[in-house]
Image 1 (cartoon, one colour):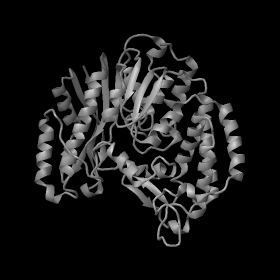
Image 2: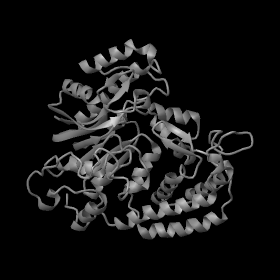
Image 3: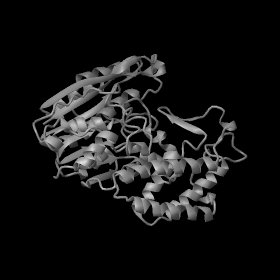
Length: 446
């Protein structure tokens, strides 16, 4: 593996993340603290959202690029392969690529998988500029055929018989034009880039916003509805932002990065190359359905075309929520902490807002146990796994995720298991909204 050229490392430091020092010096194991240097925890997205590639799509929950480089640096040697079972925003994948490290990332959400692929693709400024000119010319002459959006749920497009709608009819017609023109782009990488740019602005050009609890209508939305002109403006601005990063990093290192769109519980079985580092942050057991959070993009861009497609995707996600009914079973290994939590939750089942929450919590840890089984299979003898996990709370029963995972990992035979709390998170309004839930790093080695 060759060293990344100095100019890439300098750009990485200035615009993306801090490169491990030994990539320059080649000396010794660096001291890499897992503590924030700018006021925001490395496990949060606060330091990453304005940096190159990360600004292609807004993610509420993600760790920072600096966390990935710190994890890489903590190995003390040059890794050859990094694996991320929960790709999300692609932080691990793009950081590895910029450091000329091979990587594999798994992402269940097909739109997010395309976001990652777009960031990694060998796009050129010349190719994008040519495609943009063709796109603008074609857009002017393309009919606004709403039949292209016929698969959308009834609440998506304005009509006289509806009280609420996500998109005014004029915006929906413009979206149909955009989608038609995007599908006409022959180059797969360029087509994906345009689709990701559109996905980055569709919610901002709608009557709704999305937070951790799903989709909500904006205040006074009927008086301030978006227009086709707003869509054009936002699309152009986002295109320019993403294009700037393509231009800046056009000649970046091209290590081999594989993106697998699938269920991490089973998709990791496809990976055969040993991993020096497995780094990830799974969904927390807080009953947020992350499929709902990206619901607008998934439907509008055509990643799901029916209620059945939506259900299939939900079934491929971790059992961290109860929005759909699924089979529940607990981990195969023993955890005293988990057993105590499940007993406490079961005794309060009648007071829980959903009686299946105790079963969901048990199944959540079985899902992570499956991921750890594959992690154990993939880890090189000198490698390590680093997970960012967060606690949850139901009916005053605290689920200490790091402690439970540590017990499961020890029972699986991991030789080194450590946990570190990195910050306190605010609990839900039902639990008082105070800072009382820990976010932690769990570190494992063979």
